[in-house]
Image 1 (cartoon, rainbow, N blue to C red):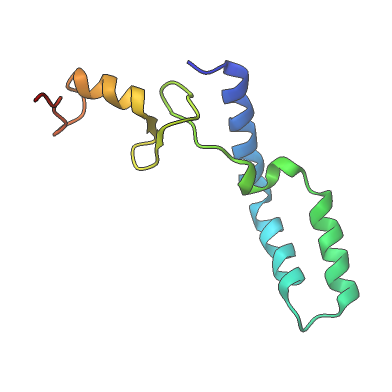
Image 2: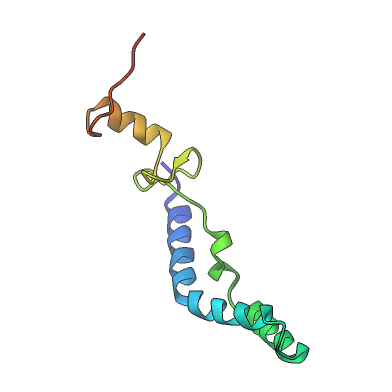
Length: 101
């Protein structure tokens, strides 16, 4: 089980990303528009730099929704390999059977 503080920090980042997504996209659009003046684009880049760092989607890290584990994460299922194994062994995932050979 991951530390509760780390899981809470990740949830806070997700909220910030959602809150500032439109503003970041708008500023990036201005910055990447080559037809605008250089000064206006520079002002937009300064505004982008003033936004919270945690509002960037790059800073998000996938975590297991059951345990909060950050490693060995299956994106499609949104759980870690350990949680997947436990659920599969207990028969809670349809179609998943423990292999034996």
